Image (tube, rainbow, N blue to C red; front, side):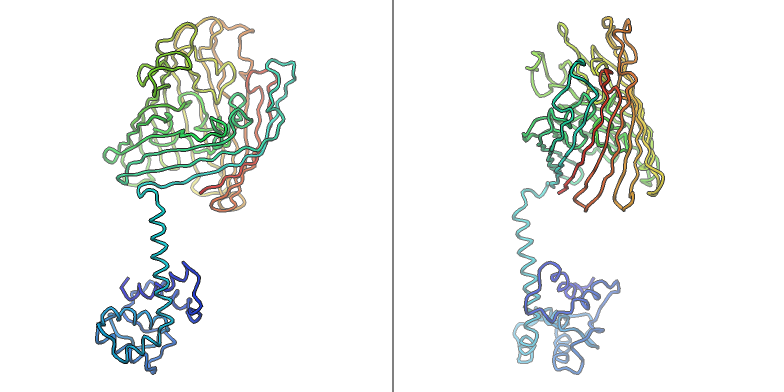
Length: 518
C-alpha cells in the first residue's frame, strides 16, 4: 500500500480507536472505510467527493501536489474533505514556508487536520501506555478462573466401612484461578510458569478416591497461591524438542497428547489417567522427536521419552525420612511413547518404568495412578512396576452427527514377588465421545465411560482379598455453552458403580462450571 493510501486509511483507523471529537462531525467514515478496504492499488486521489474540481481549494491542492510531488499523480476528480486534508498534511512536510494560498488551505482544513493530529497523538499515547505497562517484552500472560457449583452423593450408610464424609450430599461453591506465563527468548523456545490458587483441596471436586477430582479446577492447597508448574523447553534442529524443569509431569513432555477427548473429571484425562500416563509433579527432563512431513496433515511418526523423580528438589524426603534427589530418590518414573498419526487421528503405545530404590522396612512405592484407581488398585504399588498404555483417537473432518472418538486401555504389572494378598496386576479402560458445534457453533458436548484401574491379579488370591470393585463402572456427560469467546458455562452430570472399594460405593453428582478466560 502506498504512502498516500496509508494516510487516507489513518482517519478511519483513528475513528475506531477513540471517540470522534466534536469538530469531527463532518467526517464521512463510510467513504474512507470503503476506500481503505479496497484491494485495488491507488496511485491518485480521484474518485472522491465533497471537494470538487471547480472549488478554489481543489485547484490550490492540485497545484501544491504538482509543485512538491506529494502523491503519485495529481487529482483529476472530486474528493472528500478528509482526503483533501490528508493530502495537504502530506504536502506540508515538503513545504519550508507557507505562502498565502497555502495558509488559506491550512485555515480551510483546520478542523479535519486537528482530528487527524488528535487521532495520531491519541494513538501514540496509547501505544506508549501499553509499552510502559508491559512487565516484559518476552512474556505473554493468560489465565482462567473457574467457578464450580455442585456436589455428589454416595449410596453408603454410616455403618459401612469408612462411613460417610462431609462431602456426601453437600452442595459447594468452589473456585480455581490459574495464571500462565509463557516466555520465549528466541521465538522458538518456551519457559512455562503456572501459578494456581483455589479452594478445592479435600473438597468434593478435589478428592481422588471417588473420581470427582476436576480436570481443570482442582488445586493442591486450599486458598494458597502456588507455582505448580515450571519448565523450559527448546528445539534442537527442526525435529527434536527438549524439556527440563523442577515442576513438570511426564505427560507434558510428549510430542503430542495421547487423547483428543476434553474431560470434566480428571479420571478421564489422557484417555484414562492410569497405566503409563499416571503422573505426579516434580523435577525431570525429556526429549521428543517428530518426523518431518511436507504437509502437516500427513501422518507422521513421533517418539517421546522422559523422566520424573519425586523429591528431586531436595537431598532428603523429610515426609518419609528417606533420601531424595533427582537420581537417588526411591520413587521415579521413566515414560516412553511411540505414536503414528495426523492431526485428525492417532494411534499410540506407551510404556513406563515405575522405579523404587532403597526401600526400608514396610515402605511402599508411590501410587502414580491414584486419580483413577479403586482402593485395591491404588494400593498396588508394593514395588517396582511396568505400566503399558494403548491409545487411539479419530476426529471427523467436519462437525456434525459423527463425534470425535477416543479409546484407551491400561495395564500395570508389579515386578516384585510381594506377600500374599498383594496386587500383582491392574487394568483400566475408557471410551470418550465428543461432538463440536452442538446446537450452536462453538458449543461442545461430551460423554465418557470406563472402568477405573482395579486389581486383576492378586498373589495367593482368596475371596477375602479380592478387589470388590473389580467390576466398577464410571461415567460423565457434559455440555459446553460458549457465552462468548472468554466465558464458557459447562453443566455436567457424572456417576459410577462400585467406584472405590465395592461396598455399595455408588455415586451420582452434578455440577455447573463457569470458565472465564483472560
